Image 1 (cartoon, rainbow, N blue to C red):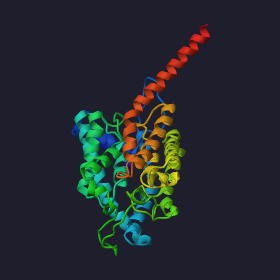
Image 2: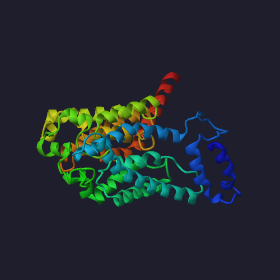
Image 3: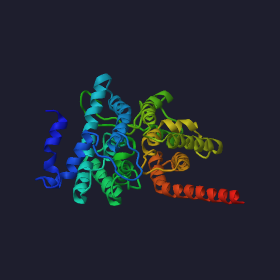
Image 4: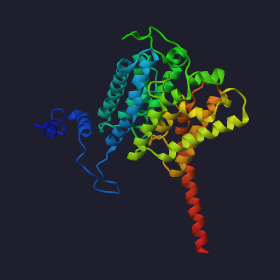
Length: 378
């Protein structure tokens, strides 16, 4: 018996009137994950194709794979391993974090779906992978669980679930971890594992490229190492090359907005060039484009700022929000060396302002059309 026939056979048990009808939302979630829904809208104007939200989310997960796989390799490199041993070490370190993230987040989503009696939203397919990728592998698992629970409950469910949230859930998890458990997510010791396994170094400490920029105005790593990702940092954020491969996948599939993505990089570069011209401290004098290849800038521009729910909806708004996101991230880095990252707070800040930007863009369009109509009437 094939999988489709098996699902159809047990389906009546979970439908209305069946013995397990109270689990209808849960069953629907598994069924629509395995198969494209066999129902379509019957009224109103809708785009009808085979791409539902789950398939869109899966495209994003596939786009994350280059950064994820490189993160496994780089994690082992940072503790003195080489080759396949380095990759295996990183994979063993990250998989428990991924499992905790998914188990915690999905358990909450399933519970809310059952309580509300609606279908299970698919947004956490991406958030569950993003959360461990933007944290150090040394983060204790219970902190990952608490941060994930906070993000899902207070970042999504209180607003009504996927599609209603104002802030990016994965970034909310990181923000919660940063402010609640600061020593575990910042400073020199946070970015290296002290877990001795497969011949890994017993304990390694050192500063990230951003911390070196903030203290010395230069980094000890080569520009090529920074671009390729052979530097310490959050698991999935170090390799700009791997992130750009993911960006190409998102743009090719039409999942992410090129307007937002490019505008973030332009905004960051513009602010960096302004700092180069003005000066003020060592951080402001580093080459502007260096900002784009270190820290979470590239990862945030490609996978966070382009979130279709929390970013701007209008085309003009995407340019504005994207540019401001990049510019504010570098502004935070330059004027507050004590917090050298900046991208997380910049995206969350623009998440809050995106609806306002869209409002003024729409109002400006309405005003322009009214003026055009008046001119034509004359």
